[in-house]
Length: 235
Image (cartoon, rainbow, N blue to C red):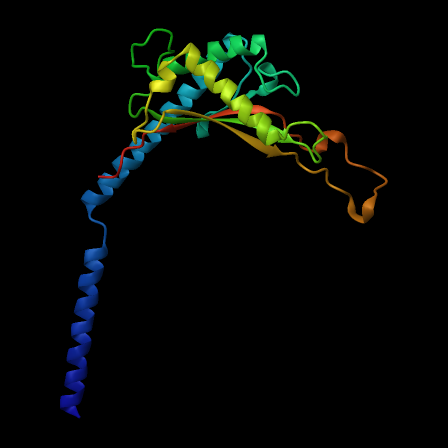
C-alpha cells in the first residue's frame, strides 16, 4: 500500500508540474502585451484620423451647397438623393450633375491628400494609414406595392449608381484609377433597394389614441459613402 500511495503521489506531482508549465507558457509575456497595446493605439489613431477626415469632407461639401450628414466615428457620409435626382427619375438632374462634379473634386482631393495638400484643413488628412476603400451605395426606397409600368426600385437604384459613377469618374478620372491595398478599385458605386418601414398597427386593430405620424420612422432615398481604412496587420 505504501508503494502504491507513493506512486500515486509521484504521478500527481508530475501532473501538477506539467500544468504549472502550461500556465506559464500561456501567460502573455510583457513584450507581447506592449506590442498589442501599441497596435490598439495605432488603430485608435487611424479611427480618429478617419473621423476628422469625414467631418472635414462634410463641411467642404456643405460649403458647396451639397447637403450631407456625417457619422464620423464610423466613417460614414449620407447625402439625400433629392439634391441629385428628380422624384422618380433615374438620371441626374442638371444641378445634381453639377453637385456630383463638385463632390468628385473633393473626394479625389481627400483620397490622395498628404499633410501639405492645399485646401485640406489641418489634421483632416489621414497620415497613419490611407483610405483603402469607399463604398458608395445608392439607396432607393421600395414601396409596399410597385405601381404598374413603373420600374422596380432595384432597377432605378442600379441606373442611378451608373449615373453617379459616370459623373464622378468623368469629372475626376483619378477616382477610376485609384486602387486599394488588395488591388481592387478604391471607389465602388452600387445601387440597392431599401425597404420602407411598415407602419405599426395598434393591438386589437384600432386605438382611440393613434400615434402621431412623427412616431413612425420613414426611409428616404440617399447616397451613402462608407470609408474603410488600410488597417495594418498585426506583427
